[in-house]
Image (cartoon, rainbow, N blue to C red; front, side, top):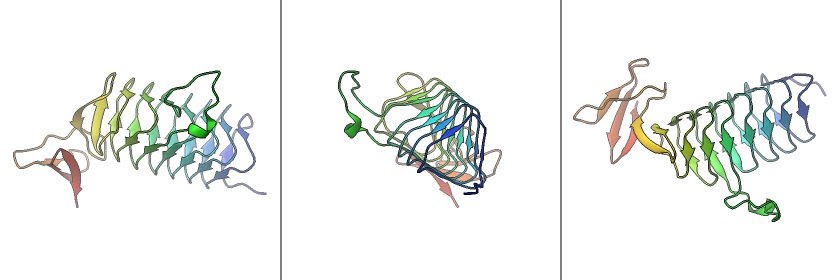
Amino acid sequence: MEKDFYAHDTAVIDEGCKIGSGTKIWHFSHIMKDSVIGEKCNIGQNVVISPGVILGNNVKVQNNVSIYTGVVCEDDVFLGPSMVFTNITNPRSAVIRRDQYVTTIVRKGASIGANATVVCGHEIGAYSLIGAGAVITRDVKPFALVIGNPGRQTAWVSEYGHKLAFDDEGIAVCHESGQKYRLSDNSVTRIF
């Protein structure tokens, strides 16, 4: 079978994986059975993608990330170096809980910074930005900037990742893209 993705010679790819065209898998990474990786993804060095994980298109996974069963990442997600997912809320070495994995969803365009931890069972909203080292213990709203331990929202960001400054009418403009956003009822939407 001819593949239309790149995998370094040291990468291990189990049978039963689906890997999209244009994807690159780098040194010492392990893609486990029944995982799905979209098109044009970049899987960094020393990454483990567990069985059943789903990654959309154009997902960037930096070095030393383990993506455990139960994680779903939509398109254009960025996972920073050494960030961590969990998939069991009460792990014990002596208790087998493989049938109790909890789903975590990372929505389109979200970015999770280096060394952040995402406790399982939460949804990371579209285009949100999780700061380096943050610990996520609850759902994150779309366009939210979350930092600290435990993670707390401190601002809103644009699709381009810039902090938004809202005027008295609840309108903000991203200085890089010129896109407009509206703040209403403690949530942000892009104005098209």
